[in-house]
Length: 263
Image (tube, rainbow, N blue to C red; front, side, top):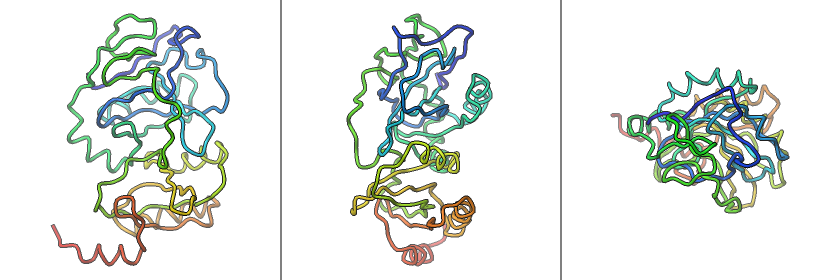
């Protein structure tokens, strides 16, 4: 089963079968649709007949971010995106995860070559507990599927964005860095700007939260995105360079790139 998604006329979740938060995520590459973020508890009826729906928390935010669907291939996610938007979430958009951690769409495109034909290892169960093809468990435990028993307190220094492999050079669009808590609405605004490129929030050695968008192959492509950020009011936006999770000077990165042999 390469896609786990359904939408029905009846409500998929209830107080007795709530939307899971901080679930165990499937192994490997998965595309999903981000539909909403809320600071307060929300009624299960808000999500209508969408299934699966699950929530995840993020470092530096007291909001819960909600997602629907699981897809090995982006084309399958794109086909149902209008359904998610039509269910009352007009700003819904697709993100990619690898082993439960968000990655850029560029990285996901490469990973899809390996994972795009691997089915999810699960026996999907509807929220009501009935077997139903195309759905995943809501609060049910099954290897490689969403469950309601995930650890909601296991905060790490880096919450979103799968790091690129050690030794891999990439340019990032740094939105800002801040040493204070950030309001959920600020994060949501940056996420909208990030779109399918994905937003990473990491802690640096100074205890600052650094907001990074995308993994760009060239300095010029990252610089173009930074120009967009500046036009949207982020005057401190800049191009940053990373080897794995280690930030290096941009000039050093450009020099390394120039020294790389051609394929």
